[in-house]
Length: 163
Image 1 (cartoon, rainbow, N blue to C red):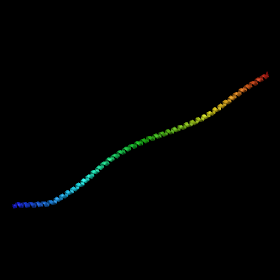
Image 2 (cartoon, rainbow, N blue to C red):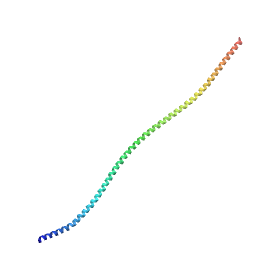
Image 3 (tube, helix red, strand yellow):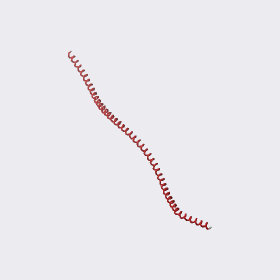
Image 4 (tube, helix red, strand yellow):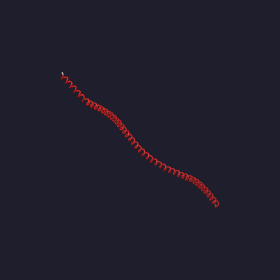
């Protein structure tokens, strides 16, 4: 019994020694465990921040793509507007040329109208002069007729007087 009790005491001393040895090791393990938990929390925080940044990055990426599409659409609209402007400028230049040509033709026609009006006035004056001349020719014809009548009467008188 004594041997068993000594063996039990020896076991208790051994357990006490093991406990004494294990306490610092357990304390170190708990400290490392706490340290690892802090690191895990820091890593989880970093992961959350990283996920948040990734989400923000994806949102920014989508926004960037949208802006690029909008830019391309605006660029296409701008080029279409530039082309339309060029066509309109060309049409305006053509219309201005036609207007200048029409104005030139109008001026030429106005000159012709003025010339024809002057010519018409001259012809009217010539017509009036011709009417006056006709009147004078009639008068001359009447006078010649009268002169012929008078000359016949004179010749008749002269013959009567000579006979």
